[in-house]
Image (tube, rainbow, N blue to C red; front, side, top):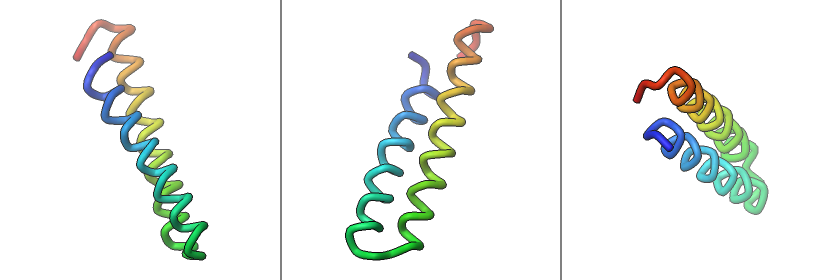
Length: 57
């Protein structure tokens, strides 16, 4: 795993936690921020996957 994959996974997990927290307290804003962090994290993971394929870190 490279740094983009690790950081992306962390953002994805953090986003899931934030989304769940937003649901628990009834905050659509926190839910939306959590979803945005998940998308950002998954995108960063994919960049890391691509770097692994081409052999760059």
